Each structure stands twice: as structure tokens, then as C-alpha cells.
Length: 145
Image 1 (cartoon, rainbow, N blue to C red):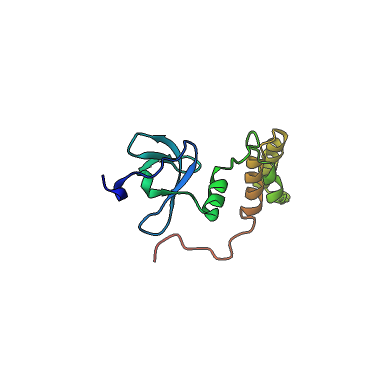
Image 2 (cartoon, rainbow, N blue to C red):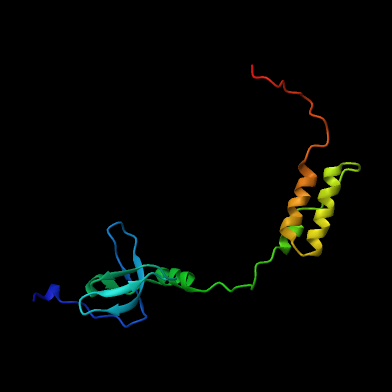
């Protein structure tokens, strides 16, 4: 076996390695297995596994290690999804007095707020604000030109 065909040292399981690609962007991966010929790696943060010869792998640079830390740092869960922020993002709409659509939407909005369904309450606020209250300024003819 020629000296340049000998495999390089096999990295330890769980370590992150880098492999240079023809396009100049490194491929990063965590060592998950070694089958005697190839090292099996998984992308930082999960994903499909890929293989490489030990001689093709190198230790990541500082910039690559920083990217690995970003990709593998878990994002803390906040529990169940909440829509309280929607209450503030859509300011209260003022129903037009005597408008039956506004009155119905306002009743539905209050009902949704009592049930803490802020997303649906915001939908009714938008309806109060956006439905037409005035007659159109231009009446379009009913037939095509």
C-alpha cells in the first residue's frame, strides 16, 4: 500500500470534523460511526448522514466551530403556543354605530377574548376595521365593456 493511500487517523465518535468540497465550502459533520473504511458523519443539528474517508477529514477551524455551536445549540421551548402578542399587534377597532356587521364582529371579538383566543379576536378586529361603511364613490356598471 503506497504511503499516500493509507487512511488518516480515525477521529473519535462524537467529534465534529470538516471535509473540504470542490466548491470551496466545507462540509461539517459529527462522527457517528466508522466501518473500517469510511467515517460516517451527521450534519450539525441533525440531518442525513454522509460518509468520507478518514484522510479527507480535518479538524474544523474556529469559524467553523462557531457555526457548529450555533447549529447545535437547542432553542428553548416556551411550552404551548400562545397568541397573546396578537392582542397588542392589532390595535382595538372602534365599531361604527348602527352598523350590524360591526356590532356582530364586536360581540364575537369580546367572546373570543373571554376564551383567550386572541388570534380569532384579532381577525374580528380586522373585519371591523376593513369592511366598507360608505357607499362606493364610483359605481361600476354590471356589464362588460
